Length: 221
Image 1 (cartoon, rainbow, N blue to C red):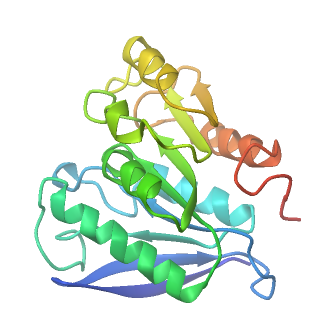
Image 2 (image 1 turned 60 degrees about the vertical axis):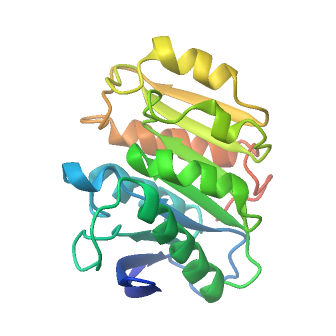
Image 3 (image 1 turned 30 degrees about the horizontal axis):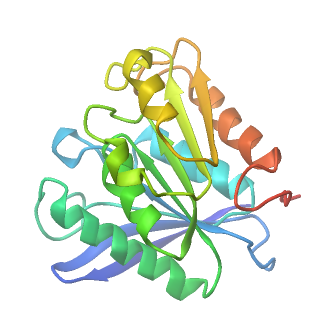
């Protein structure tokens, strides 16, 4: 059975509260680990958000240890909201934490909504990150300029009825991304995937099992 570990991640302003989900078989050496970033802190976003939870759970089902954490000023995390600037430092700290626990293992950086806005450019820039997952991309905020040179595998999962990243703006945004990339549209789902979280999980599972991810053809048993 999967196990959750409470993690205190050191940062310049104190600490970040985190939860590390370990796969069922903790003796197996993972071929990838993950950091999952939550939605907007100023609008109730936390690491306990249902979408964030389901992303971490799905990655765990694939044998990928997944660390989700609270940005500064959320839950037990110290500091205060910094409009995305300090939150980037928080992501670097989470990447350092997972890399310390699993040295030399490739990292997947996943983000939902605000978490994708601040997280994906960092994942592009950090050589330890080999795979990116963006869910509920707020296309008005995350321009493709920040991802223009990012040639790491990218999975984008979007609700068909996403009010912050409608298909009218998502399509040109996605088209401008460099390869390799994959797009999954969840029919009838809104930004928060209300009532459609199983389909969100299925999209992530299908992507990894297709061999398109940085894991290649590896699939956890």
